[in-house]
Length: 299
Image (cartoon, rainbow, N blue to C red; front, side):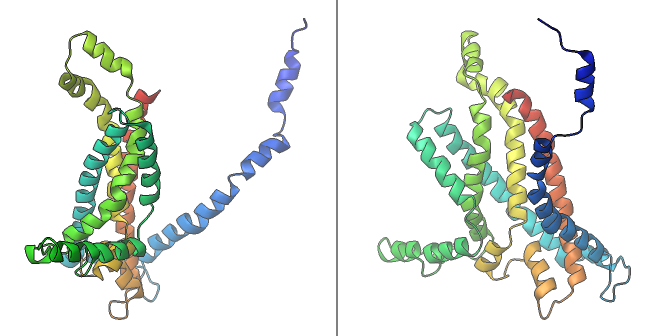
């Protein structure tokens, strides 16, 4: 048997990329064009517009306006909605995912839940707002049935779909299934050998979760909640269609500054969007760091 010629190997290393290799790089060209047209160029325009006045001159006034009490309040309300829906969606989504993975429920139920979660996590915007108005609005189906059949008037008892908590309830429709989708792989990565080893050493189920299960799940759980926070923080169409601008959220305020007839200040809107980009960047960095730590247990 003849050995390979070292000279041939060196020639192979120095050989220019083949046509198939170049075609493989062409496969990512559509994504690169899409990212350039709809992510990089708009983000660059936001950055430049944040430091311009209406005449195109350089100014720091737009960023200084971010410290106004009404704008700070809008960021606070937006973060509160995002935090509430991230915590509630994360907790209940974790319980649902646990029930169909580690909990041992029938596999058909798991398949149905994941299929529904894949659809519901992308059902947002005006259709979702209309669905909740038709269901739980003042003359919605559920509201009318509860009032006429059971004598329960939700709105007389303080419930209001068009308020802060009503918006949080609506957001949970896509936050909860998104949590199910992103936390299921982490739960699938929990090896049975870990539980069996802890039981053989005399540990109870509670001690297993305290000392093994929860420490392993904490990084992916936190990363999933950060993802939910960012998902709710940037939502616009659902909140606007449901509340009509009654809640002072940052995305709604940006729309009012860019498209409004009264509050028309596009450069301030760019600065508001730039502030959102900073918050979202922090979320992405934290999510990436936690995902790297969580991936150690999935190898």
